[in-house]
Length: 541
Image (cartoon, rainbow, N blue to C red; front, side, top):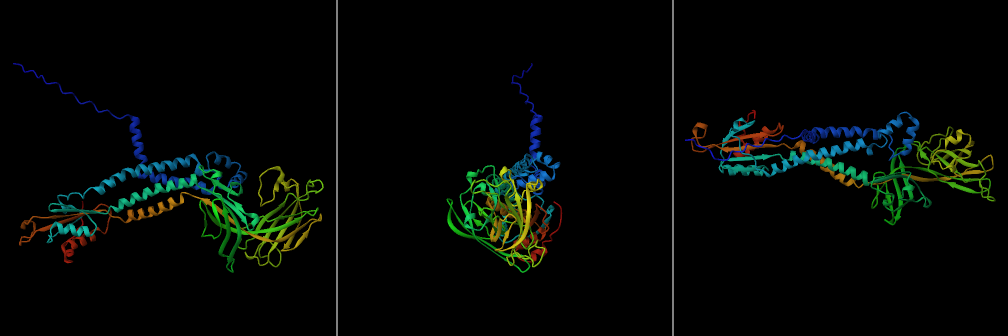
């Protein structure tokens, strides 16, 4: 008799579908990108990429220096410009490194954070079957309270404890991984803070001369140098004005600065009218801006009287040359001089300009080229007069601190004399016009800026240091205690009491774990002699 199996045939399992090569490539690429090694490499590359931004002039900070670089290096400048070397922090390649680092850190931290939270919520693991194989191992008498007494001792020492029957499991040292995650999360916050400051921040520099006629209002046109973030428009600048009322400076006998203080009047729609003082290390804090004192100097007040008796006054700042005596160089230009009052037209080729060197404390004898002290003990102004077409009517941008040497080389401006003037002295030129040195006004160099990322950046750096300390000094370790049954064969006392076996395992490199384990055994055993009986030995896991 033939038996027919009428059961339905079992379906063969469908073959497992292999992932496509593209999917495997993407998965492996993501793993490589989110590895800690890749994050460190990208961080190193970001530091290297920032070097050109510190060495080469940048258009957003100093466009005139970029133009000068093109003049000085006509061969290299166009090549560097093509790769964005003059706009490093806004270039494609710098942004690519920045975004890759940002992505790598997020991809690296997210799974580690998930695993760390899971580990914090889990209970300490079960004790290994053979504790004697652990790096630290000993046996001791079971305390009176048994495993409950052991658990109490461990909890007082801030161990995470789990009691399972005749065993006690405990672990400690999650601060290391917590600090590690805080450190890397703070790096992401630092990148976000830098991005906020770059996108929504702005800054500008301005020389502000003392006096009511030289007030400065916060508009882009009144800055000597201004840089606005990509998300900032000129109309977004806060509305306020500054007027320099007084500037005080003290110097040591050697000429080194000792004290600076500027007093200004602040007013405007966005700021209440008030008087405020600030210094180098104590900036002026406004509602949406901070004013920093960068430097100071002198602005000689020069009055020129032309051939028609019309007088003009210049109080342009003279820039310091960098010596300790505050020797300053500058330009006093009078493009509207010698205008015929009858016709209202300027006499051709009769514009006047004076280049000068101001010495707050001039030497007693020639040469008068260097000041001996930064305060005005013996002020003198060494002027060189020029007459001709200054080139200011051509609409070509130029420096207000230097005479256009192209006009001089072309013969359109000629030197007509030079003279050293003391305060109050007058010089009569060859055409009967006069120039008089009236005195000086103080000026300050201000940097006005707003950086919305500074506060997040400061907090992130503080948290970063805290996390770094935790990751460096945190040590993760585990210990187990197991009560052995009363058996003379395993060394138990004959009075019926039992022994307890203890083992310890450091999860990281921790040279001091042997001492800590011995102290823990001493505390559990209840006397100092237990440490001598601990017989702590070194072993392998």
